[in-house]
Amino acid sequence: SQKIEQNSEALNIQEGKTATLTCNYTNYSPAYLQWYRQDPGRGPVFLLLIRENEKEKRKERLKVTFDTTLKQSLFHITASQPADSATYLCAPTGGGNKLTFGTGTQLKVEL
Amino acid sequence: NAGVTQTPKFRVLKTGQSMTLLCAQDMNHEYMYWYRQDPGMGLRLIHYSVGEGTTAKGEVPDGYNVSRLKKQNFLLGLESAAPSQTSVYFCASSTGRLSTDTQYFGPGTRLTVL
Image (cartoon, rainbow over all chains, first blue to last red; front, side):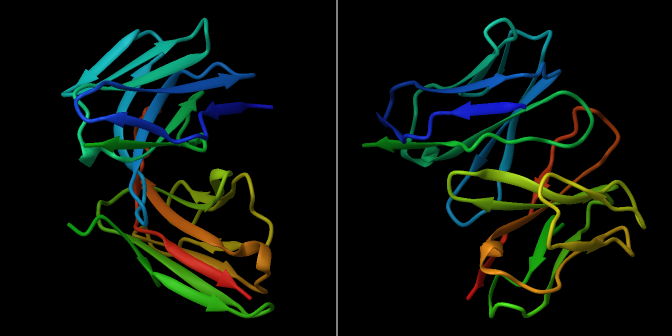
């Protein structure tokens, strides 16, 4: 069955550093992958989408990579700020409109 | 635009009681979804709808029913609540026009079943 793995342990980093979050998937080949941010007590908010034929996508301080050979996506936040503290969810998707989400990784950016 | 709204925000039920969660969107989206989110389990799709008058089962549909009588509203019903249905419920919507659709989520409903 399809499996999506995100590091369940919280990632703690210092302000100004680059945060890197990992999303691994097995037993399927997604055509694209989405990343969402979720703050406590709120619904997820879409951040970035990357297609299987794109190696990298950037948006301001965010960068996403998609390696279909490794079956992995990396999500980077450069020059991280305390306001970036949240849980980040990945959703590798084979197509269609139904998304399957990973359990998310909590990021804490400390001063 | 309010986006996606959910009512109520919190609810406590006793085992066996019934209730309906309301989701409304003002973005004229075709597709709507209901998820539940539990610690360590991530978001799991309960039911979804690809248009007014249509519904389909997701990953965890048992114990829930849905209706989409109006395009802007998607209702999730629990006929006989069980403690296992204690969760945070999220509604989402998307345009449905692209395979790369992104989803817009509501603020969630925290449901406790005693």
